[in-house]
Amino acid sequence: MTATEENPAALHSAVITWFDAHARDLPWRRPEAGAWGVMISEFMLQQTPVSRVLPVYEQWLARWPRPADLAAEAPGEAVRAWGRLGYPRRALRLHAAARAIAERHGGDVPHDHAQLLALPGVGEYTAAAIASFAYGRRHAVLDTNVRRVFARAVTGVQYPPNATTAAERTLARALLPDDEATAARWAAASMELGALVCTAKSEACGSCPLAASCAWRLAGKPAHDGPARRGQTYAGTDRQVRGRLLAVLREATDPVAQRQLDAVWHEPVQRARALDGLVADGLVEPLSGGRYRLPLG
Image (cartoon, rainbow, N blue to C red; front, side, top):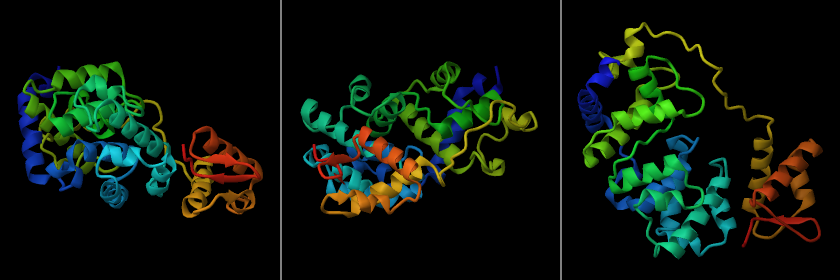
């Protein structure tokens, strides 16, 4: 057992005190954001940096201040408003979740973890994050940033595994403060520490409140010796082609002809595969005469 595990209260105090002084003023952290604002941010922030999310988030809340407002729109409007955030299936899932909230929960985002988990597009992490950040509930919130902090400060390795493991979940639960309000604050604080200080590319140990007890630092910062870390390739991939096809459809007010889509990518096989994938994912609706539009139903 490391020194950090032996004294979790000191760990909590150090990180929360740092957070009180250094937390970013993000709109979804403000009281007026409410649970719906927290939920929108959690969907948008998956694999997407804060700087790209901020303007789209503000536009979404202005247009759809409650789940019922989004639920009343066609799903294609959610895809259109998603813009260039990437991974647009998140927009469809958020739309489906808004409809479920309107139908099952009277238009209010539920606070119960099990009810959150039952919503379309809401997995274990997102349910825990909403319950914790919106309602102050006691849950282990394990995103990439938190996993990296735990890997270094507690486990003594540079990076966590590529996929979350049972051992990581067990550790996160063991480190969770008993007090509900402190646990919620700890969840936000440990995530912020990973986002701003204990980053993947350039850890700033001189600014870290855990530097004196960090197992990885005390071990001399051994290099990562596990499986290769996954990269984020984009250029030339089907993801890029899908993005270009969706851009045409988002900007169109009427159905788009096949020839307009053909013009966005030179390689016909890859283009057709990307378009078929968009249709299969429910992001694009094919019409008669070789025309396409964003989904209405």
